[in-house]
Length: 64
Image 1: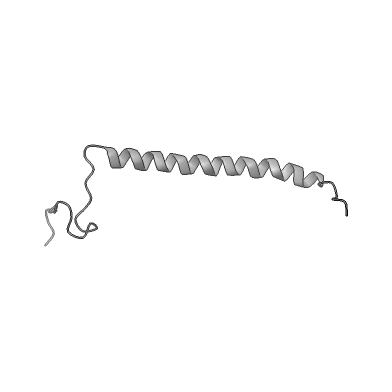
Image 2 (image 1 turned 30 degrees about the vertical axis):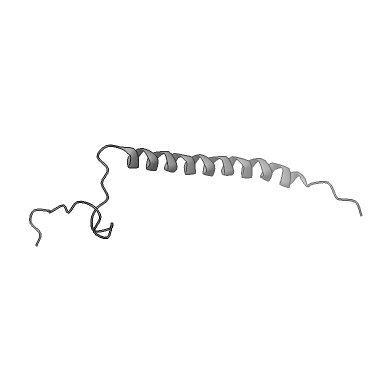
């Protein structure tokens, strides 16, 4: 059984799908780079409220 040739619409959609995939991959890489940069910066501290007691307690004035 022979395969039918691709329809012209599929050829056009393929290039759009490749473009969307590249943009999505670029966005994921951008988020990873920003996360890595933030974590490796000198002033990064995990808030004690989300670190289960590991970290520095920071008091905020005006709250009890």
